[in-house]
Length: 562
Image (cartoon, rainbow, N blue to C red; front, side):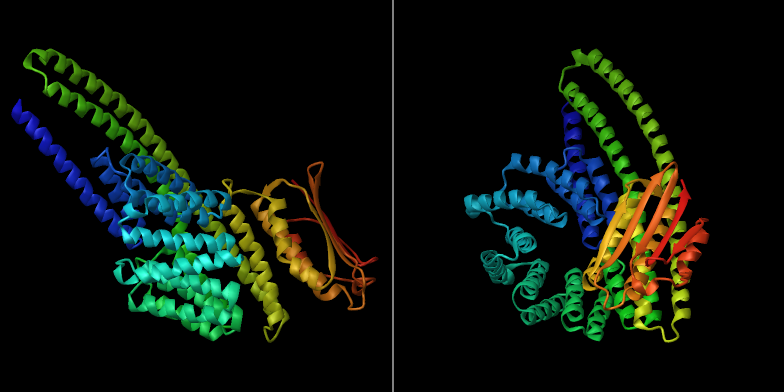
């Protein structure tokens, strides 16, 4: 009996040690942005140790945040918080506050962020002497100043709090192992100066953050700061070449382990800058790179959904196995007279295992079905994106035919149409239904992109769209049509001396027909024969008969069966 108890004790301790080793491996992989492998090692660690500590939940929360699953990430922070409060360790509690502050800042949840920030400040004042970990304290201070800047940055008192907090972090710098906190603090100061006080001082701090990240080999802060640094050159000085130079330097430090979303942002920015300088060959090259990273994110999210279900099954299985092991341990401590009872419990345990085995098999079949469906959806997404890219090429070709020197005006028209397609993909990304889209939300967002131009040109807009779900392909053509019609009206319809300028757009349904009506009262169009080629071509694509009238300006309408 003594030997049996000793064996159980040694086996338990070996399992715990193995679990910690797997956890450390997961943390290492996460720091190198190898999210899939990090999740795999973490799930194995949880499988080996059902009574895992809060640090497992925190690590899994970080993985979920990296791939954009903020709701699930916040859930695991709540789970970790419950475990940590039982231990009552001040450093761990402060870390949870800091992580929740960052999560609510990331999701722009101002009210929730304010509550968490207030609770965190009260906790620090009450427990300052018990907070020993400088790394956690510095991270808390950094997230605190970031939250103030995000939600209350225009207030003078708040700006002073931000600067005081930054000074406190910089005083801790010599004693900090994690230099990323310092780099992000310098970057945050730069943003405060740029947007709130003096842009030139902001440039100085961007340069300091840039140099500090480079000297300490901090890849992630270096890339993040480079994006802000380049944005400064673009928006404040209109210096495209300096912005490109900063981003190209950041591109040189990116490796296979870099953050996928961060890399996507870098490539997307470079694409836009090269397009602005009319280097379309480079712009197209970076557009392809950005697109590859976007697909990589989508693939990982789909894979992560399946693996989340697998992890839940592993946890359920471990619970049943742990229950059985506890029963065996209790029975091992009993005397030999309870042998028959032990046998009976073992039989019951086997029955329980058989039941859970059947349940797991059923769950696995559901997983196979989900995997097949997700593969189909991914294939459809790739096909749709490919078609849209072909459409972009056609649009660019049409505009270049109209303009021999590929002037800036034509390029702006192309960008407006590409933006319409980008808006469609953004709505599809947010929607669970990838085949249909709310046409009111989609067209309203396109219309909002033109608000500044309408105001600048003193044009009134009467824009009414009935809310309903329609096919995404049809929605795309509607978005491109309304974009082209807006551009034509702004550029050609109204003479400078015209006082009342008005554009009207209505989209509604009657008797299974979508009625599309667009008009402007531009005097330049009255009595003329107008033939908007691109709009007419799209009408042919969606197979509708259109009507054009120029008696009182320009009007265009058609009906589409639905």
